[in-house]
Length: 259
Image (cartoon, rainbow, N blue to C red):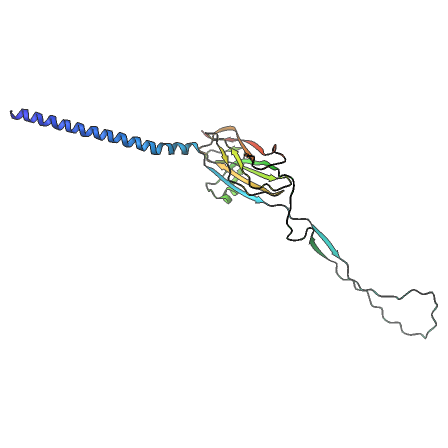
């Protein structure tokens, strides 16, 4: 075998070895890409399909019991003139009449007493009745997620400017005659996936108790355009027995600018 033939065989073997190595590397890269897609692509899609929401709230307790004013009688000095008599008194020698003591009137005072006493336990009967009212639609003018900042930055407006988080200010009140117990509410918001958000369990509301909410959602996930509907429903899962459920929901429209 001459030298040229030997060199040809060496080059052929080297090419075959490189081809095998390249094929193995290609298969390995394909397997790695499949594993990466399986692990991370669903997480990204999940983030796109779920709207980020923001919430602030303020609880308003019942009115205080009525108070009554009980006046204290005016203090005075009483002078007794003795019993009335029809007998003509006998004449007596003239004497110097005594000095008259003037009547002194004291200041008027008053005290306040609770009608129901203090420390009494309230008892209720009948059924609760949750009513939902949308006070205003608008947007949050801050990027903060703190509850107090959301309340203070809320701007009531029928139009949400580009880049701002749409929001709604609403109140849920118990106008019934009994406590609600634990309850929940839901919000239907105009997002690209028509999201319905459900609240965590809320504290029990006695008659006349109410809670104000400021609820918003992420601008990027918002469905842009005019007359986008926002709906709030109290006791959506009907866990609370109510005297009236026709007033549990309220809706309002808002225009969200942008593309």
